[in-house]
Structures are given as structure tokens and as C-alpha cells.
Length: 228
Image 1: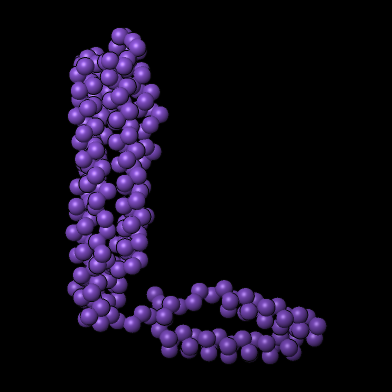
Image 2: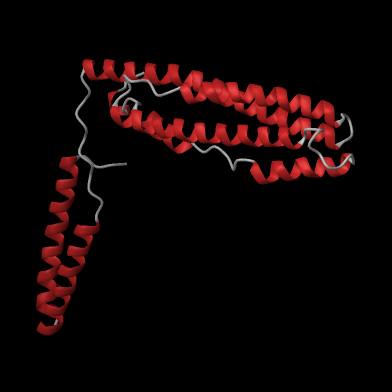
């Protein structure tokens, strides 16, 4: 439970009066040097408490109707962009699952190297198309400056990840080319493809921090939300 401004002032006033009366009693019953030392320690303690006490944040002025409308517009701009962006992320995930499934199927002996190379070639083409789409998926111009900059960083990270994913698929396809392979042993061929996958795979795509900052910046403060 938090005290109101008047309640806090009254509490401080009462505490000051009690402290003053206590000092008078101590003045009469304590030796002067001890009393002076006590007053010095009390002053130092009060100063420490004053500077360490958390400051009450000033209440932000209520948003105007125009400010709320502008913020809602920004939310809609971001939401529309993010919905399309999420489709790209889902496509990246699907391609990556296909890639691993192709390699796993070959490793388990359920497909030959010719089929594996053909499937990787098809995936390489799909991956290039997706990379081109992600590269063209730039942040919306009407988005405000801070959010636009954060979204630019999201796009930068996503393009780098999509490019690394495509590179991994393309190199694996090249390694699976039957005409270029130096061995006909399926187990050895699988180990070769697995080594390309391990060496070239991107670490991961981490954009949660930027997305969270954007959503926080575009959220209407609770103090300005209508009462339920």
C-alpha cells in the first residue's frame, strides 16, 4: 500500500517531532561527547537514506487523442509489416527442416545420391527465391525513427541469416553432385555432406530484443488506457 503525498508529509512531520523529543531526552542523559557523536552519526545516516531513497517517478501527462491516434497508426503499420515478416521466418524454418530431412533420409539409406542431389538443387532454388524476398522486405517508411532503426537491424540480421542458410544449402548441393564426388560409398558420401552442414550452418537468428523494444515503444501507457 502506497501513501499519498499528504500522508507522506504527515508521516515525515510526526517522525521529525518524535526525533526532536528523543534528542532532547538524550541531550539531558548522555555525556556531551557521546551526544555529539550520536548526532553526527544520525546526520550521516539521514544523508545516506536521502540520497539512496528511490525517487518517485513523475507521472507522465495523459496522451492527447491525436497522440493516441498516431500511436495506433504506428501499431497498425508495424503489425502489417511483421505479419509478412513472420511468413518469411516460417519459410526459413520450413526450408531448414527440408534440408535436414534430405540429409537424414540419405544417411539412413532411404534415398540415393542422385535423388539427394536433385532434392538439394530444388531446395537451393527455393532458398534463393526466399533470400531475394527477404532482402526486398525493407522496413516501412512511415514507421517512426527509433522503431524504423530497430526494424532495420532486424532486417539486417534476417538477411544475414537467410544468406548463410542459402549458402549452406548451395554448398551441400555442390558437394552432393555425383559427378564431383570422389567416392561411391554412401556412408562416406553422407559423412561428407554432414561435414558441410556442420561447418557452414548459421548459428541462429536472434531478433527478440529488437522486436520487444519496438512493441514497448508502440504500446499505449497503462495510465492512458481506458478503464475497463
